[in-house]
Image 1 (cartoon, rainbow, N blue to C red):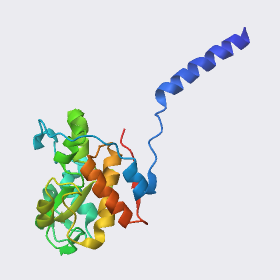
Image 2 (image 1 turned 120 degrees about the vertical axis):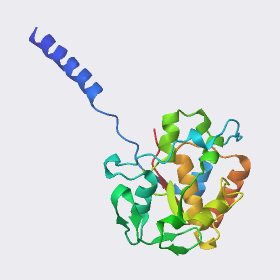
Image 3 (image 1 turned 180 degrees about the vertical axis):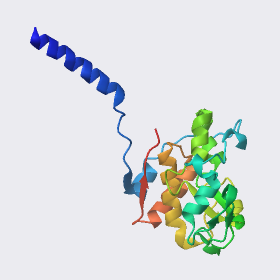
Length: 219
């Protein structure tokens, strides 16, 4: 009888633990760029129904208590020389490096926060099927340093919503980094690529043999 009672208590304990212990988070993965590109899901893109308003941004950021939007949190995190953070998260001073065009910027107003994979491209590649909450998480993703990038407004607007088959940073020596960060973002969010985009990424990977991609999948 005692054995049966102990077995019953153990079963209850295991049941409680299964409810209270969270599953482990996905670990970061690092693979060569050529392998990362090969693992990207392939699909035809569609922009049907897209509106920028489908991706709520900028929200109150990772720390709502700091009074800063996601945009300003990214600016603070990516500053080479930290700006002064005033009331209502007003930023003064500071220095940033726009890696797309290799330009030093000394005013936050001269910067855009670029979505590495633009919102329209994300929509085309699978985000159209997401919930509004997941699209908001994507648009404000600070969980990977390459998801949101502070760059000059000029370079960001030149890029617009184009993929690497259509646009690459004007600074040629950062193309390997850009290809890795684009690919990592797509893998992180399980976004697909079309044939033209895949071919362009393959060409970049072949030209960047020592480049790796590190990403953590989002559940």
